[in-house]
Length: 259
Image 1 (cartoon, rainbow, N blue to C red):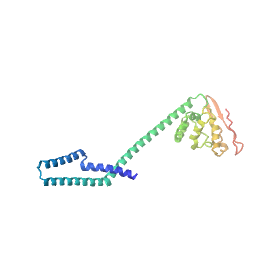
Image 2 (cartoon, helix red, strand yellow):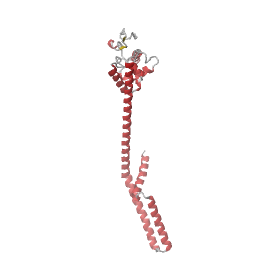
Image 3 (cartoon, helix red, strand yellow):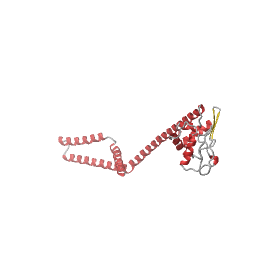
Image 4 (cartoon, rainbow, N blue to C red):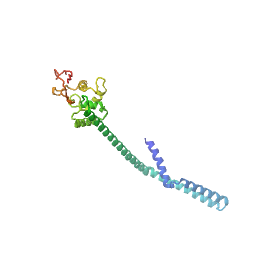
């Protein structure tokens, strides 16, 4: 990493020093050098200048080159040790700030897309529940729309919106079977499991009990057993699904849905 940094800073310092000493005019410098050489050559050939004068001119020319080289070396050293690292740091800071702005914009865009996605999904769930012509609870609507594809916090928001506008929370009464932290994973498991159907009103109750048993969650108290969870009036027909209390504290009785 360090050799690569030295290579970068050397290349940049050399360029900056050249810009300072030669004013970024390499062609002008080259033409001036070439013109001086031609002038010395013709002066000697034509005899306009004496040999001593030509020698002095050549010596002055060499000293001029040496002086320019020393100035360039000094400028390179100053840039290498101070100005170039400072310029690189400023460029990196600018790039970092630009990247931060881009990331913030991308994050804001992602948040807006998430909000729109969950709002659209909530509208479809609520509309399905209000327009339904079959026996369906709010959990069925959420499951049919595969709400597990949302983020966990967005799923919670969706459930709250369904309860707000429809009056029934999809996970009402299931906290003892499916903790809040498990809701998204449980919903995904339920939707993809071959033993359950999202269109069947009571399957999610059996799935919740199975989830509790498979995760070794404690048996809920009698008042928290799945009873009267699925109670709704649809088309004038009162539907009530209950489950008998367990016979003992160690064995839960099977679901016995009735309608």
